[in-house]
Amino acid sequence: MQIDLTEIVLAVLGLCSALVTGVLLPWLKTRLAAAQLEKLEAWAKIAVAAAEQLYGAGNGEAKLDYAVQYLKSRGIELDMAVIEAKVGELFGHGKGAAA
Image (cartoon, rainbow, N blue to C red; front, side, top):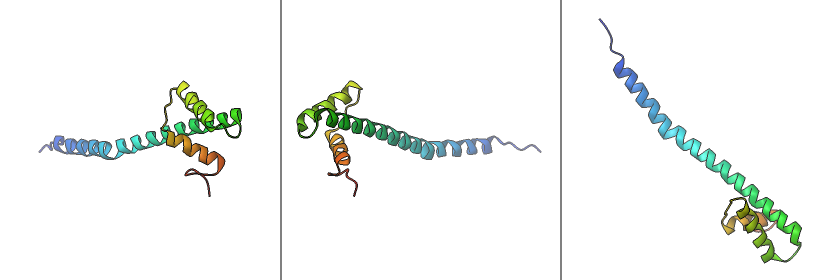
């Protein structure tokens, strides 16, 4: 008597592909998106710090323009809310401030 393992192998392969599609791929996409977001936020923080060092206190509009141009020159276009959050983190006020 011979046992045909084709059905069992196909079922196992189907289960594995379902796990990869349902669990592994979404997890990888989330991790990659989080890493990319961290990298973009780091660039925004660098741009804000550079603008502050160049222009000093006041001159908010000039600093903002510098930060936006700095990021654009590196192929990064961020929402103004992200830049403002980095300003808040850097200077201890706003949404991104530490308590």
